[in-house]
Length: 196
Image 1 (tube, rainbow, N blue to C red):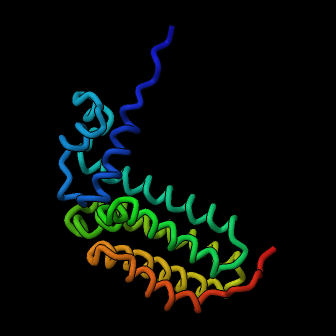
Image 2 (cartoon, rainbow, N blue to C red):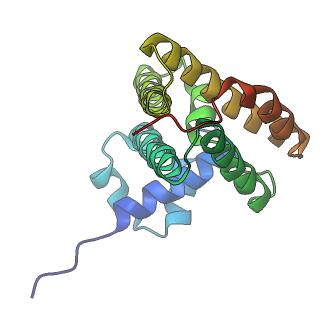
Image 3 (tube, one colour):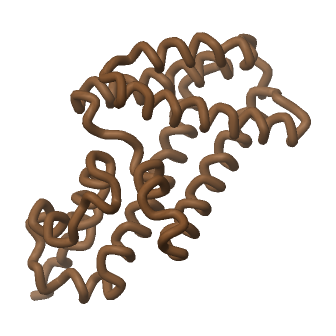
């Protein structure tokens, strides 16, 4: 009978994701990741030969993939760009409340902690942000925002506004920054259905 495949890799990445959201890259130790994951310590370097840096890179990539899924799922559930942006902002606000303002976004925390200190982490963060901008741009084009340059620049503004709002809200321990920023950016997005 075949042995069941170990889920240690996923446990380690999930643990890293949580800790990076709370503590950033420099504040998170490899031993802490392994302990929180409940994974065998000996498996870490087998699964991640590059150690903590490799785990950080993979966690950033997974965070980007999760964010793309959120962007796309939210888009499918909302008929207008304004409703879509509102829903994403509410999702992040709910997460902040749920975690007692203790968790931010792992791409943000890793970027602030390790760029330009690590070329590999910098490349992962750069790639993650490019992936997010591309997904947001695609969504804005879906809602009828053209030309492509306008959709891309608005996507970058949206990403910066949402991430900045999360940082300010964590610092303030309040959703007020999120609410104020959302009020200011919403008029930039169409409130009518303009897609197939």
